[in-house]
View 1 (cartoon, rainbow, N blue to C red):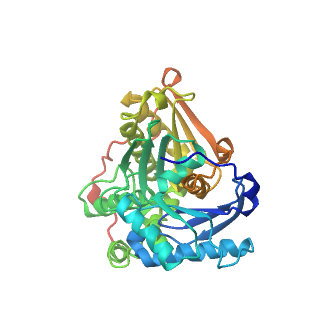
View 2 (cartoon, rainbow, N blue to C red):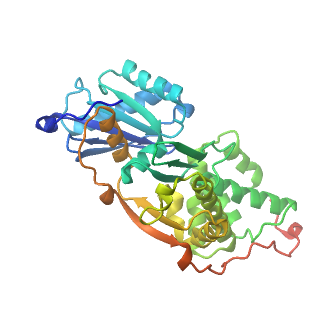
View 3 (cartoon, rainbow, N blue to C red):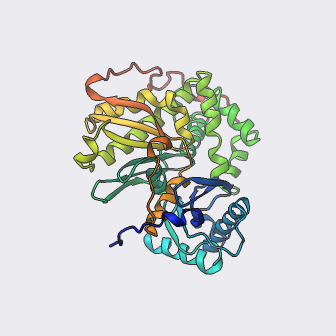
Length: 374
């Protein structure tokens, strides 16, 4: 049990606490002072220990902290008071402890204490005091809910081989699958591939499907592969039917995450002002307007949620990680939750009118073997 917080306000200027948000494509470090004021922000490389190994991940974390200390004229030999790592792939307490120990043992000047948790926790604690839902849809996808009593429930987060539904990776893989099957004559794509197939060839600089296999297998890079989702977003802006269909499928899947978690939500969360709070993190949410109808239809049809507020962060989730670090060393200060996030949609069942789908999901009637082959 944590001891009562001491009045340490006279030391505020000397306290330096760090938080790192890390994913498959990049990482961000924020260092705050004893009053919770962000002092510097540092961008860094990916920090997923499953892909990099413990030693390389620890080295990257150390390098980011060193750059942060340089920005603040803190000597390299002076460690931060505490550092919290909120990283993708950090779901197990045993491996989390191993990563924290590796950081402290290999790089003792990084921080006096180090704490490791899932990337979803940093996102949640950036915007909410203690409980709610975080739904990540970036390179990968995952949902996490913390109830008022501190119990946690997760959904997804199993990586691209077993999940990542609704993520940028999933959108790209699904686009490839539609193209491959359509050209093979196995299954007709739900909409013409006339934009997606040329876009894939251009993006990956290939001439046919055989060349594309290199990016799927031999030289697979999840981060690079997932970036094709941006081209799908462009296709949506230009009203390409297949891109709109893909994004609508993604919206349905992401809503299913919320529904799965909501079934285990305590009434404290569901009956709060604004209903169930969902923090939406990741680049896929930038295409909300193209996912909105299918997402809301799924929420409505499930009957699992009567009221829902969707929030997006206005600051890095590294801020929330730094809050976690402060609490771990029993350092208290007021937190600016209301400034760290903004509402972008509020759903209330009694006021909701189901929209008419823009793109019908029925397969094309044109025989798929008429498609242009490689």
